[in-house]
Length: 536
Ligand SMILES: *[C@@H]1O[C@H](CO)[C@@H](O)[C@H](O)[C@H]1NC(C)=O
Ligand SMILES: *[C@@H]1O[C@H](CO)[C@@H](O)[C@H](O)[C@H]1NC(C)=O
Ligand SMILES: *[C@@H]1O[C@H](CO)[C@@H](O)[C@H](O)[C@H]1NC(C)=O
Ligand SMILES: *[C@@H]1O[C@H](CO)[C@@H](O)[C@H](O)[C@H]1NC(C)=O
Ligand SMILES: *[C@@H]1O[C@H](CO)[C@@H](O)[C@H](O)[C@H]1NC(C)=O
Image (tube, rainbow, N blue to C red; front, side, top):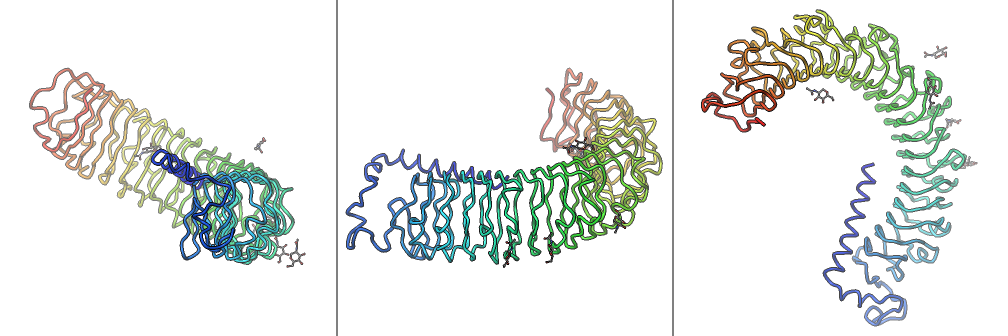
């Protein structure tokens, strides 16, 4: 994705430069009479001068030839034989022939990205380039890959073409290759048997955004990173990943994988650290996930339960993303997270949680359980979360009556809490004194009971917008407790005056959409640091 954007930007930049040049020097056009070799270039030698540099290009002594973004429609002729790096990206070249390449025996890097290559590249053309290490052909309109690429190849980029076919020696027999094939039209039938035969050191393979239903067989055991997102994978055949003991990153999101399409041996990948299975058709957490995993994406599936033993073997897990599934608290086993001592970030928003699940990971720092159906938090629901720093409970169904006043007592490190979008009638009691950011907007809060803000000297940002607050909703001296407060949002309430005794630290106050009709000159006397007052 980022790569494509970059390409687009480069393309646009190239285009602007061309336009710019034309605009600034319209007379240059006259000098650009092509076709006939003109006197200036051929001074000295014959019709095909040694070491000449094509007019639109710049050629450096070390074999670097730059013809990028100069509006070429044909592969340039008369390139120096010493050319090692040839930049032809961002032109409109439609064809590369054997003759074009035959004189470039020193070529190490060929960049033809973002041109208009359509036909299949002629096979022998690349074969003669024995030094070729880097071949960039992304963003063209190629429908088939070259049949032979030279064995020295280190990186082959064919992204964003229309490839339907790969041949055995396109990527086979290349001892040190990485391959980029994303955004093409590859199907299983277009891949040869033994596609990477003899390319045993292939470390990076990017095949995202194609039409593959199967994981290719015979992937080299050196593979470190495999991208297959946005394909049509429905299942992972037994043993498909069996030799990939070096694989660290596996991207399988946006496919049609179901839980039936894998078994407890599928992910026996002893080095795997990053696995993305999001946006598939899973109903269960896959079993047999490796202990080495650090980040596990399971969001946007239909997972409806977590049994006791599904996650617990993943001892290194740090990030677990389970949002947008169909989890209920009662279908999450109370031992589901047992022993996951490194798990610090857990996302379970947009599920069907009717309460806070039991047995949450004891070392969690970030817990995102917003957009569920949680209507109650009892005294001990959060009792084990001693290390939690961020708790997002927004857009649930909490009422003040069902939120136990001691529920937060163990959250001594909590810095950020979001209770917005619930049905609270009063600001909860017993909020952690460690809080720095507190959001309770979009509730029905009418009262801030005596002592509710006591000791909250670390609170910097306090959002109370869209509630039912009046001037007398706050207890006497409430604001003076908040000696670090810099931002206070009281917009969309029922206030008739600017609150008195605001803390001295205050910098921004939002009071728009209230019932304030006048502001006495003394209103902001206690807040010398005020930078913004929003009153509309
Ligand atoms: C793989 O390469 C070996 C030689 O290195 C050859 O014998 C074998 O037939 C090849 N297999 C495929 C499927 O191409
Ligand atoms: C894994 O390696 C073994 C031994 O080299 C081989 O027989 C098997 O076909 C390989 N599996 C896959 C899926 O490539
Ligand atoms: C994997 O599943 C099979 C049954 O499908 C079972 O017999 C086997 O014990 C399981 N292996 C592990 C390691 O859980
Ligand atoms: C996803 O799974 C459901 C059943 O769990 C099935 O009805 C549906 O067809 C599957 N969708 C795809 C795209 O495989
Ligand atoms: C809670 O999550 C929502 C949705 O991601 C986000 O907009 C909000 O800022 C979060 N709350 C806090 C306090 O970070």
